[in-house]
Image (cartoon, rainbow, N blue to C red; front, side, top):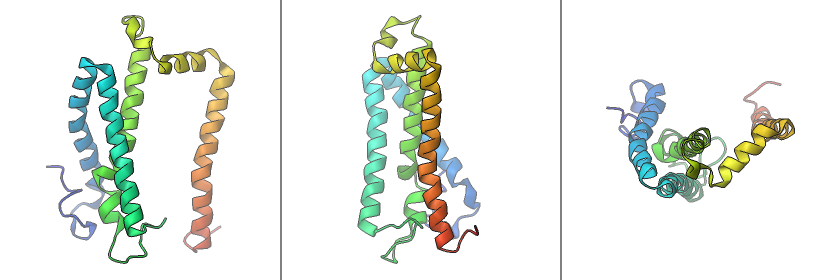
Amino acid sequence: MFINNLIPFTRKSECIGWLWYLANDFQFFLMTPPIIYAYCKNRKVGYLVAALLVVISMVVNGALTLAFNVSVLWGSADMGFNGNDSMVTKPWSRMGVYFVGGMLGLSFFEYTNRRNNPAFCSNTVCLVYDKIQESRLISILLFIGGIALTSLYIVPLGLFLADCGQVSN
């Protein structure tokens, strides 16, 4: 039924532990047709619904993190909270990323079909796509920026884990 990321709530008693992500993905897949329907009726409403789901995910994650003092290691100063059980495997923690990808997919759809429907390129996204496609320098700078942002997340985490003795240098 693809609800194994919600029932049982704790990961200690689940059967096939790694299938929690498949359940998340299927739940998001089921949420997508109403968003696409809203998008087909009114593009702004479709984007708004997807953006609202992203914001809800961010607010819920922020509230759980703040309320239970969640640390980088998914533990908590309040030992009654397990970040794995309440955050990592749950759809409210993962849907933000999924729907950001959905919005980027919709914007790319608009960009590739702008010749068939001129109204598609009346937004800033098409201008950004055009600039990226026209300029090799901008493409290279965005590539380098993406690598730099990825390094900002990975390098400190590696240093942190090395300091904790979990990763050997």
